[in-house]
Image (cartoon, rainbow, N blue to C red; front, top):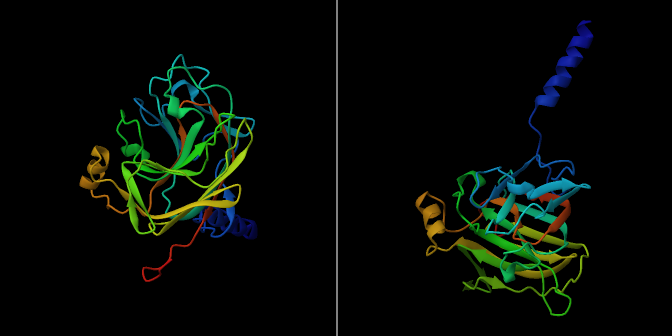
Length: 265
């Protein structure tokens, strides 16, 4: 009996011990069953008020759906992974399906994105529409025109490319256009404030560095006044809901070791 009790105690201690971070390996961060580990924020609603069941899990896919909406009414949404990240790779397969909801802006047609280096979701003002972060934009083709995906867009933020500050809202990548409802794999590699790489179906399509807040943006000013540094080196990651139904699957994260302060990487 004493031996069994001792072994039981060991197993309990092992189960309760904090898990070591796994570096350099892909891990699924969406369980395919529910939204455990993720938080929802939709414009004009409190955190985790999943208005009209916008974000849902069906057939092991994370779906953005508007079948309960009469019109969009600027209800921009984000679903956040619940861990702050700095050095990592993130990849996801996505496809646009169905029709854009009524009342949505034209620019949001087959438009979504991966937001990163965001502030904590519980600090986002209830009425805020556009998330202050860097975005790897995900676009779908309209069947005729060239419409690359994996672009970079900034809201309340800027980036640098080739030593130059970029203040344009979006910069196109070199990716091809993906029409219809085919699955596309998008990946971002984020190395703090030093380097960001976008990949589409495994190919590098865009690189930039020095993501930073735009000190002329009112929401960014508020963050700066709260003590957030100008240069963005960490934050939260989110997937967007911008009025067009979209499905996500195989949502994976690879943690990368943070270099020491003397490293140039």
